[in-house]
Length: 562
Image 1 (cartoon, helix red, strand yellow):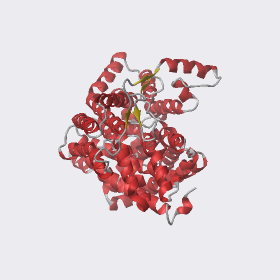
Image 2 (cartoon, one colour; image 1 turned 60 degrees about the vertical axis):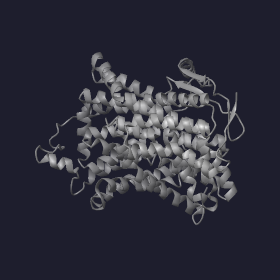
Image 3 (spheres, one colour; image 1 turned 45 degrees about the horizontal axis):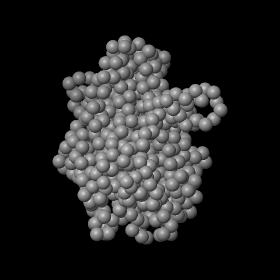
Image 4 (spheres, helix red, strand yellow; image 1 turned 90 degrees about the vertical axis):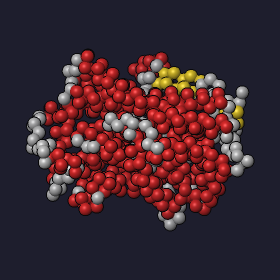
């Protein structure tokens, strides 16, 4: 039996209906920032609040509300939860095998300065992982690396979430932008060009902003040359690749250029003073500071061997994202290559797309068409499987015993049980919000801003990523609404779509999924409220910058629109 979404359920009043739609979101912020609930409890109770609003206010049948939550819960387990488990597992393997001591030494040989380590690992390396895999892998891996180097876990998680702002729009081989082409009819290349004329401003600024957060203005100026090399090399490459190559490669190319440019620069330039955190300076009064000079000297082969798990991770994730390998892994390859055809058959066996009972094609959306709903499980095509393969190869490279290998995996699973529960419940909450029409209600309210819509267009993307945890999902959720509203107010549709994606990147750092992933990766399960309080103000500030850029590009800077 079908049910039609009603976007103004309270006396046909959009404002009152929007206030109702905000209830689960406001509750979630209250639960984490004021009540300071543990993440999994905040996730569970927020889901219950969302279900209540969906059923009692939006009139959604209870069975459909529960089934939409189940669809989100499954997605929270795979692919998102699977990525977190395998990422943390791989990192733990390097620690247990002793390889991480060599990794730490190799980074220290480049620089002992915490500011520069943050640029190398959180900004550049994290952006590379975002471009190759997306989802939670970039924050999980880079945050764990920083903790291994000696960063405070909360700081490491926060820094990596903020650094992840620059690459998100082009993440996972450009999927967020490619996904918008279908529902909007605007070519992905055109959207890529416009995003590539917005985000480079933010990308050039993020390295400076990171160091300002860490150390303040005076200590930031001490490493300004390195900051400029990191940010400007990234931004220029991001602009050129997005405008002349398309949306697939900007993150990967920008990250590699930035990483190598900074690494080479540090061979010829060093800051006058080495920055360490206050806690490290205090500890140094009791114990010697952990410096490069105090490190065992390792050969190039030993360093390469130690880094090999992450090189394998990069290789497998890159292969998993390449065309036509990616569709073959999911059983969707249609070419004539014999090898890919064989992989395609395995992919078909390990890919499951099951209609959600009582939900599939039983909700009529804003366009008057039924909404498809599937439990989609890709066991071979998931990025987490690529990471697991890297871990399996690492077992032999690191000469780990079977007992240690399986023991480390079980240890990771136990540590991540509650964070995975949080991720599943908040993704379930996102699906309920979308299926009930609450997300569309909020989008319609912002679309009423008229001439100010160019300023508020990025807020839609920010809101979408906060709710769904994904720039891709936010673009699919609000892309059509952005286009229609832009045409009504005289704004170029491609600018509105780019604003949705660019605004969305600033919401990633406060998305419940991202918060849970970051805390899980650094062993802070249960302290999600602290991390949200750390990132919230930075999210709002960076969103404001994107709003101003979009507003100016709709007016005095309209020559920048392709």
